[in-house]
Image (tube, rainbow, N blue to C red; front, side, top):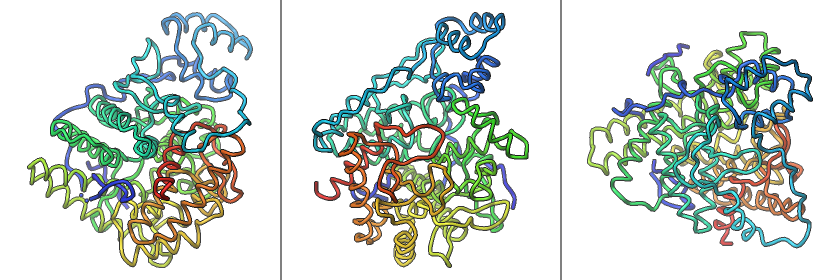
Length: 523
């Protein structure tokens, strides 16, 4: 298999209308700030940074990377080099030289009477909304030009794919103003950096997340032709980013599909110690492990048996060898969106080009990412030249974007019902590895993708089951704790676990999907 370093307005039918295409070359505009030109905290603070992270001066690796220096970097580093610090002294040094977030105690949960859950979610939006960001000197934060909604907990910035599912709830609660301002912010990020970063921090700039921007655009009510032209240009630039040579693989029949990637080959700033420990256990060049960990983070499924060479152990992570069903389905949808947008703008040549690209991608997905024997879509392993084992919730993506209908969609529905349906909703995978994107966890975005995909392909009864079970799970935990959390154990019907950090509450995409599922149910 040769890795060739070559270089939608589709919305789930539950909330709006939909549509289809394969990708143009980069547009004439060039990113004004290449991601590689923006230093991360690890780049800036070197040995100080590595010592703080490796000695776990703060329990969460994200704490220090979000800190803001009180003095110029050079002055802090000069003083650090003069000293000798045990852990207590190093913590004191950091606190004296940085404004460190997230150290305040978490308020105790209120166990008094609860608001109805829909009123609680509506009341959360103002608490999760942030004003435009102009970062203070030395901050790892990126500027954001418009108001936006954060997920909550340790996630203090604008995140990419989270925002689509958050927007579903904003639409349901009449907060179209925030949908439009977040869209403007995302387009601005593409114009500045050439892609939407994983999140609006310098340490996230080297990667993106699953490309949901075209679907977010489908939620917009803005019909201004100038805005439409700017958004179309942004989608074309995003497409060029995701179909760049390093992200592309040419298959034996000449078809080209994409995988996740990251431009850097160092530990992630926010998970430095964890990545070093994983690389030390991997038995291969550390740079390869770091890139695969980073690519796994771009997938949003960080981490899952999907990205593990042995299907169980994080040290075998090999994300960049995998052509995923979800990524390529979203790129198909993006191509169709660009084709439709170009046609509406009177650019028939671009419209035909992207429609042709989409048709070729669909054929490649149907050939290389489909298991006829198992009735599922999956992830193609480039090195082993086979479809990876195991049913995962990613099998619903071709239904969700509209790529698959008819008998094949019916077979996928049967597989979902047999393998992934759990008492509390949809399992993420059928494998329990201790990673958070595996069984027994269920995640709000994947519930929505499955429900919307099953709805649009006529499998309403199964969609109803998943939606009803997941809503029951969310409402049960809300009744117990007053919280909507990041993920749930859908087998035991309780808050989820696993992963690199404690369970987070807030929580943007759970709020959004819960509201959208309630609207779907007529509530």
